[in-house]
Length: 457
Ligand code: GLN
Image (cartoon, rainbow, N blue to C red; front, side, top):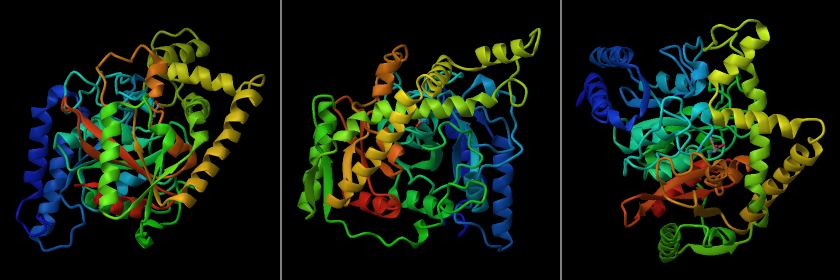
């Protein structure tokens, strides 16, 4: 708006974002910058405005792209050595839609390699630092995007959420992060992690910005057959009466300050006339186990395309074709990528398929049903995003199970395909942000965003 009315120029906004990106360089937010192209796009927008031409709803707004969104300007690495050197010929649908409205990508943000992780420490390029405490992790896998918004470098950033990768870093940095309903936004042109749970969403500082971004990017895409017809823009905002609290998530496993924040938000809602209902969701205790079977199985399949022949990195000095595959995969993948490929192939192997993958698929159906039942008892659910605020760098990186436990409260949404919005809920005594998440039935994204305004004091 301020740009269209010529109050500020697009070029000055982009220059300011680039200046801040440099000022905060040691947080390691970006893997690569897009300075020249960004300034050229901004100049084009200013010229259009000067000529009195119509510009898009995001004209001149600088943003940051998680480095797994493909676009032809610059390399897309997905935080991995394996993709270094890859310049994509295609543009992700979400990026295309944002650009069509005039948004300007200033750089690509750091992430766990192939989005495997909860801290951004699995990035080949080294970790991103938390925006509130430089000795702590940014969260992951979209850590760079979350910190880019939290530090005020950009107005918004893209993320991908397969099991919590938008919501958890949003909560670790005190901002909003939306994992939309599965299929609300297109996955086309984003490096695939687990195709049945991958969701494309955003980090913003306000619910209003989130709403605008969803209204621009939601909708059916012929290039992604799992996308839903655009329900977002025709959604009626739901009248909320009852908010559910999951009994099993209110115990000592969860950090005391997070439980306190949850209690305070419940009291706030009650004071506004909403009813808080305690709901039982006993099947959710299996969600983490189910996720860490289904997700690696899909990862093993999706990552099998990286063989040193078609994309990015190729190991040198291999003697034969098998050697080329082996060396490329050995050198190109991070340890966590390899772990998931091995788990995935194990649970899919003929002797173990029935015992693991098939069982997990059945349990997933029970989780879906449990959410359906829960939403017959309440309109939305309010829960923690993760059991703790941002942890210290290095604290969990050598203990995969401890890292997986970070995802305890986030993965069931991906398995069920329901939307979740991480919202800021204050800070603890050490100044670390605390986040909560609002969960709704499928296709309730718009109402969820609207309702989150009730929780902002
Ligand atoms: N932390 C989860 C994992 O490691 C989720 C990752 C994601 O959502 N991309 O699988």
